[in-house]
Image (cartoon, rainbow, N blue to C red):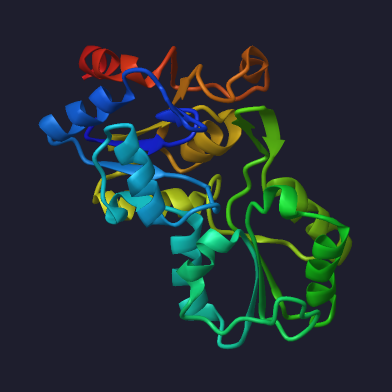
Length: 260
């Protein structure tokens, strides 16, 4: 093993609370010169804000240490879209798409791509229906999913993420989404490219049995499941077999040393 991919929420922190010992694990990576990258499906904040958030937990990082769906979408849009895009993402992340021409906030036509992220409580019928109308007004309009995370664990309990809304739009429009985030195999391949490591040399640490574990293993990467965050014991009964299960990311250095 040479490199590590870390999920964020549920692995290094939960909401606004750090996972105990998480900072020491990243320090261990740095001290041992272990290549690592933070993979997240969050669309609620840009990479600069993620750097600031980790810093509050005494975790050192830089913007280039993150691979996010917004970053993957930028790269895809540059190569595939020449017209306007319609953004259904939180305001904090809209600046990540500043280079692209954007539809008006209430537009129902004219988009070459409809981009769906996690709007959280901002989703309502009118908003979802506007995304649907944008798709239906042009058969060539692309439906872009910034990840397909089904749900996440917030301070007040489990909350729906972007995938249920993407699935609703797929079903209604008959359009298949282009997924630019976990669990997309291409997303994990991009992570390997940035690390300059092979899949067989890399492990993924995550709390999501589908997005983190199944997704990474579909790309040939060993998935290590932690029992923090959204983990539930029933996850182990879904027919997805993690490479291993550890209680917390704080157990990673000992696990790494015993398996190296």
